[in-house]
Length: 336
Image 1 (cartoon, rainbow, N blue to C red):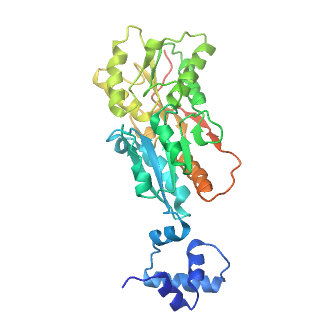
Image 2: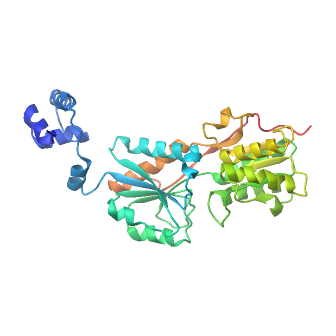
Image 3: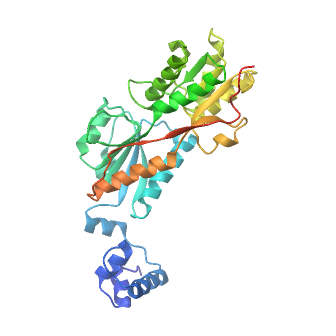
């Protein structure tokens, strides 16, 4: 028979409320009583019912991480999302929340929020001019926006210093003597992470007295396959390019493979900088010079902000900016 919280309380000789306090780490319970309850829970292999807890607390202990229009396969391909979800899960672990990753298709279907009675959302990289963004706001549930750069006071947001990242990667290549630097991006808009990194790229060029050339900005290179195809575009450029700054590590890995298949070596023929510092970056051949962002911490900070909203707790800062840094490895070299 299934063990219930009442069974635990009866055997421990305490009230159901006392057992609940021990499970949730709340209330005043003596160390001796708490130890006795925990021992009985372990002996009975008792697992608290998330549904029952949700009915009592009026929530389901469930949050969703939404990645708008994420293509099938991109999540499995990109360790960025693994590390991000790991950070979110760590931030929710002590609060006994469950996390689910949700792709939203072009039809902007958010019915899963009501279907599962989701307590809160973490939304990654949304366009503030989109219908999906307006639909999410209309839900009126706790939400944190990540990597979105939404100019609206009062929203909870987490992002890295992407402008600085774009600047640092470009400045590093310039310091090595490169003047023709391709920027490989995912998709450019008038806001968002790639746009901020483009601004940093432009800033570094201007500081060095180098003209910005829009022809050196290649789109649709954010995935491994996209980076692979960007290699062909790069080789076909009329200008002699000596370096590429790819705004994702997996895109940089795809680019390096594409260059290799066309007889080009990195960094002998072309220096390459990536972005993210996913855990594979140090183990590629050559190891990848990249802009490091703390992906795990970003996920955890987003979870902290979301749980504060759900629990009605005050926060000192709703818009969090996290630092980035340059990690120099073997994929870049000075022009001889």
